[in-house]
Image 1: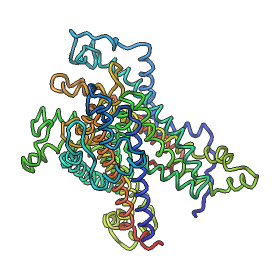
Image 2: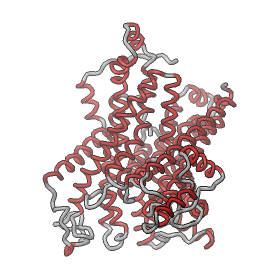
Image 3: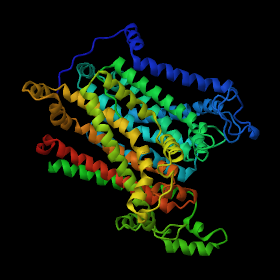
Image 4: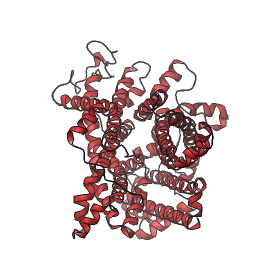
Length: 289
Length: 315
C-alpha cells in the first residue's frame, strides 16, 4: 500500500488559469466548440438545402458558390458536412451516455462489494470486450436491420465495459482512503459512501474517458455508416458520404477529402480536449484506451 | 505461476462459452425461419415442417445449443443457406486473406510505434518529442477507411504502384498477392501505430522515473543502454496489453478495410451474408472472430509471465 497525501483543494479561478494556459485544452476546446456550433447552426441554416437534388450541379469542384464542391446528386458538400456533424455528435453522445449510465454504476458497485460480485462484473466485462464494437454492430444489424439507432446501441454496449473498468479502478483507489474510513465509522452504508464520496472523486477520470469514448464513438459511427450499417440515406452522415465518394475518387476527390477531414478535425479536437482536462485537473491521471 | 496460468485459462474458457451462448441466443431471436428461407415462399407447411425436423430445429433449445456448440468444436459450422456448401469451406477460403492482413498490419504497427515511443521518451519534452506526439495525436484521429481512400488515390490512381483493390489469390504467386495487401495493411496499421506509440512513450516515461533507472545511470551505463535494456522491458506490460486489444480491433477493422479494397476476406463474407440473411455464416464468422480475440487476450496474459519474472515466482 502506498502512502497517499490529499492534494490541496484548488479553487475555480486556479483551474481556469491552468485551462487557458494549457495548449492542448485550449486547442481542443476551441475545435469542439466550433464543431458543436456548426452542428447547432445546421438546424437553422445551411448554405444549400441538403434534401434538394440538383442533378445539373452534380460533382462540381470546389468553387466560391460551393466551397467544398458538390456530390453526385448536386448536393452541397459543406451543407452535408454541417448536417452530418449533428448526426455524428448525437450518435456518439447517446452512446457515451449509455456506456456511462450502465458502466459506471456497475464498476462502482463491483468496487464497493468486492469478492464474487466484483469477479462476476469483471467476467461480464471480458465477455463484452470479446465482441469488438463492429462485431456487435453486425450482430445487432443482423437482428434489427441497419440504422442510426442500432449503431447507437452497438457503440453504447461497447462503451459499457470501458466505463465499468475505469469506474472500478478509480473507486478501488478511493476506498482505502481515510475519509472513507471516517464515513464508514459514521455509520454510512456502501451505497451512500459510493454516491457521496467515491463518485465525486472519480468524476475527473470519467470526464476524461468520456471525451475519449466520444471521439471513438464518432469514428465508430463513421465506420458503421460507411459500410451501410449506421445512419441511412437521405440523412447525410460523414461515413456515408465517404462511401458515396469511394467509387468517384478519380472524378471527384473532394467528395472524399472534406468529409474525412471533418472527422479528423472533430476527433482530434475531442482527444486534445480530453488530454487537456486530464492535465489540468489531475496531472497524474492516466489515459486508458 | 501455475495458479496464474490456470486462472487465466479458466477465465478464457468461461468467456468463450458465454460468448457462444450470446451468439446462439442472437440467432434464436432473429425473426424468420431458416427452413422457410431455404425452401422459398411457395413451399407448403408440411415441407417446411419436414425440413425443420431434418435440420433439428424442433429439438429443445438446450439440445440445439449443445449440438451447435459440439459442431463448432469439431469445426462443423453447418451449411451456408445461400452457397449450399459447408461454412468451414467458405471460412477456409477467406481466412487466408484476413489473417495475413491482420498480422502484417500488427507487425507494421509495432515496427513503427515502438521506435517512435522510444525516440519520444528519450527526448521527453523536447522538440522531437512534441513533433512525434503531435503526429501521433493526428494519427489517432484518422479513420482507417478514409486513410485507405487517400492511399488508393495517391498510390493506385496517381502513381499506379499498386492495385487499387481486389485480390489475385495466393495461387497467383506470393508477390502479387502481397502487393494487393500492402495498402490495406498500411491503412490498418497507421492509426493503430499512433495509439501504440503514445502508450509506449508514456509507459517508458513512467519507468524512467524509477529508482533502478537512476541506479543504472549512476553505475555509468549510457542512456541508450538504459532505455533499451532496462526501461523497455519494464514498459512492456502496458504495451503488450494494447497490442492484444489492437489485434481484436485489427480483426474487426479488416471487416471495413476489406470492403474498401474489395478483398475477399472474412469481412466481405460477413457483409454478403448479412444482405442475403445467411445467418449461419454470420454467426460462424462472428464466433470465430470472438474466439480469436479471446485466444489473443489469453496469449497476452501468458506473455506477461514471460516478460515479468515477478509474476512467475508469485503463487
